[in-house]
Image (cartoon, rainbow, N blue to C red; front, side):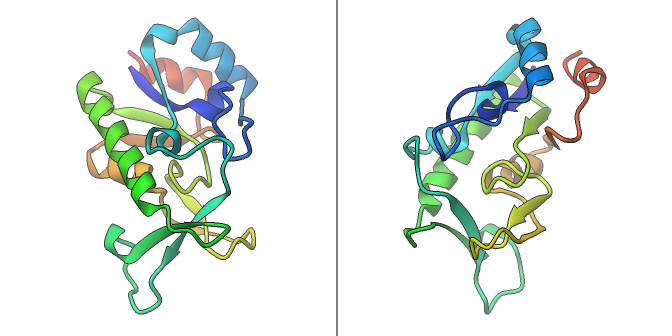
Length: 160
């Protein structure tokens, strides 16, 4: 079984109320639905759809990027860290229940990105880093891919 961000599968869970559907991935998911677990950590953590965009902000005094040195704020300045952490924990529970070792997650997401996130200034600037859920999954041995990295062939290998 493989974990996939629900927005990539066409589910309207994106902060705007829409989705980030990838047409070939949606087709692949339809053919392999018994081997796919769709999640949206932000919704699972209690955030509504639609919702304000959110970005991870790092404490200036700390250089480390660990969970204790960052908070998630929405564009109105509200701290939504707890919802992000709760969603990540719920996703991790499912990963453990289903023995999932691979995930395809939304690039640049403050929850799901395994590689780059926005810098917390809402300026569109990306920095190297992981989203809250992706980081937790990676700490537990899950290989995280973005939708820009996977191919149908790679997915076939991952679900075997």
